[in-house]
Structure formats: C-alpha cells, structure tokens
Image (cartoon, rainbow over all chains, first blue to last red; front, side, top):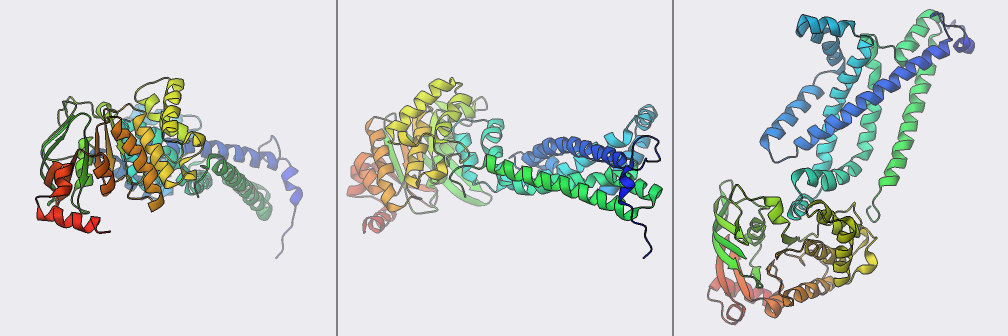
Length: 240
Length: 242
C-alpha cells in the first residue's frame, strides 16, 4: 500500500479558510453533541409518555401508544430522515413549506425532531417493560392509599421503573448519539460529515476516520461512566 | 360500615363472585376464609374498588362505589388496605413510605405527616428502622410497616388480604399481634386469612366462601361450634387438623 501518513494534518489549515482540520472536526463534534442532547430530551419525555400510555388501563391510551411505537420503530431511520427533510415541506401548505426550506440550520432542527421521535419509540418500549416488570401489587398499593393515576406513576411506578431500565436506557442514549451521524445525509455538518470532508479535501482517509472513531469512542465511554455513577447514586439500599 | 349487596363478578365467561351479600358494622371484625380460588381476595378487593364488579352494589360508610359522583381516590384514602406481599414502595425509606400518601392525598404538612408516621411506627415496634429501606427489613417487619402505612391515613375501616400468607412461620405472630391489638382498640376490620387462631381470638363473625359464593356467614361461636354447611365443616377439619 502506498500511503503517505501525515498525523500533522490536523494542525494544517482547513480549506474553509478559518481554522485547522482539528477545528473542523471539533465543530462537527459540537453539532453531534447538540443534536444528540436535544433529540434525547424529546426522546426521553415523549418516550416516557408513550410508554406510560401503553400501561394505562384505558384502551384508547394503549392504542395511541401502540400505534406510535409501531409507526416510528418500523421505518428505517434513514427513510424517516428523508421523509422529515424532503417530503414533509412538500406536503404542508406552500407558505409553510417554503418557510421550512428556508429555515437556517434546517438540517439541525430536522435531525433533532426526527431522532427524537424515532428514539422515543424505543424509549417507550423500555419504559413500558420497566413498568410491567413491577409487581402488580405496587400499583394496587398506591391506588389503595388514595393516590390518583398521575400520582401513582409519578411517585411510585416511574421512580422504580426508571431504576430498573437504567442499563438499557444507557444503550438507547448511546444509540441516539451515534444515530446523529445519519443526519449527514440531510446536510448536517456533524462529526462524521466533517471527517468525510476532511478525507476528501486532504486525502488522509486513515487519519480522518481514526480521529472520528476515537472521538465517538471517548464520548460513548464517558457516557457509560456517567451512567454507571448515576446507577450507583440512585441504587436503593437493600435491593439486589 | 361496609354493605355488600348481591355482588357478581366475571372474568370473561368465568364467574368469580356470585351474589355475594354481607355487611360489616362499625367496630366489627369479620374474618373471610375459604379454599384458594374461592374468591375471598377478589371480594375484599372489590370493597375499595381495586377490582371492578359487574353486578350488585357495595357501599362504604354510606358511599356507593358504583355512583358516578363518588371520588374513588378520596374514598380509598379512608379505607386502609394491607396486602399479602406487603407492597411497600422499595425506592422510598420507611419514613417516606409512611408519609407519601399523607402528604400527597391528605395534603398534610410534611412535619405533621412525619410525626404521625413515626408514632405509628413506634406502635408497631419499629421506631429504630425509620431511616431504612423496605429491602433491609424482614417480611414480618415489612408487613408491620405496611399496617402502619395504612393506619397513617386514619382509615375508618381496615382491609387485610392474607396478611400473613407470604411470611415465614416465625414472623406470623408479630404481625398477628399488631392486628389483634388493632381489633381490641375497636378498629373495623375485614380480614381474609387462614389464621383460625386469630379468628377465634378477635373475630365477631366468620364468612366462609367457596367457588365465588358466601356459603356461611355466622357468628364466631356458631361457626367454630357447628358450621351448617358441609363444605365449611370439611374446610375446618382440614385446616384445624394440624
């Protein structure tokens, strides 16, 4: 293989005119983190709501929850990204469509919403599984004390369920983080997109993607460590 | 206090309660017994509307459960319930288990709820464990906390659903002691239990159920002396044999 290694490439000026290749990657990292965190906020809140609905006695709530989950988890993320970005603006009234297309950072907002809605379907299933793993008597005990449905979830079922599902929720968070890379297909200049353009401009394919790989790995491992710390912090004394 | 009138309940095509009619007066202790699957747990759970029923009527303290205007959470807050598997909230300390519903349902100030909770904890002999979590207590201790938790709501009646069935034999006594004391203080109680010693000691009436029906509803002396139905006789001879 005839390859010119050049690890110093990161400190060479990028073709953008300002900053180095390293700066370019770091700006990509910034968008990756922003997209991951914003979409997680949607995924966590909406997912919890949908998951709870699937465990409620009301058949209507269950049906709504189930429909949501089956719709959003059964369409490939890439297709969903395209639907939100290319198809939605054509389907709404023209004024809104044009406004959507001209929105600054449209790819960022789209990625946040798309990932948030997609990951919410997965979070919902974790939340549902968590709640259903609890002894049936817990709900009965809460209700028997006079707590209403909202209080039963807020003070009894969810605090226990979230503890149970913390490990798989960490995985969901990591998936969501890494899925942000799909947004490069709608033009979001996140980390993977930046690594690719660095490779195209500099032809240093190995250096570019080694850097991206290491950065993803480091963030993910940090998340894993934080999740571990959180798990220990919320552990209930006397439980296994 | 509790009036159960012709209650029928179905799970799909299976009828689990058939025309159950009985009542519990203020200050009365009624023990409900019968073979497993006889519907006794289901019946007691209909009293605070934890289980819906399709036929008949139940009223507690004159309030009809089926009435659309009845605020069920409010009514349940006045009916204490103790479960077979304790059902303390595992993520809350003993103190928080005792105060949660007082604060959220009765809107008692935190300090007042705490004082009330700790007083009841002392009453069931567990003051030393206030800061612990349910997982750190034995089954018997957890059940005593569960009784204290129900009492913290100042209930007008207490329901017990096989409170000692999930306990190791050596822990049954400590829970029954609390229940006996409660009965002697005049608490209105409806207890599903197989503890015939407890029934003999404090019950006023014994209800015997079989296959979803109330087969026998008699004064204690009458029930233990000479039950009228052969099924009750058979049941008694089996559980009193050892």
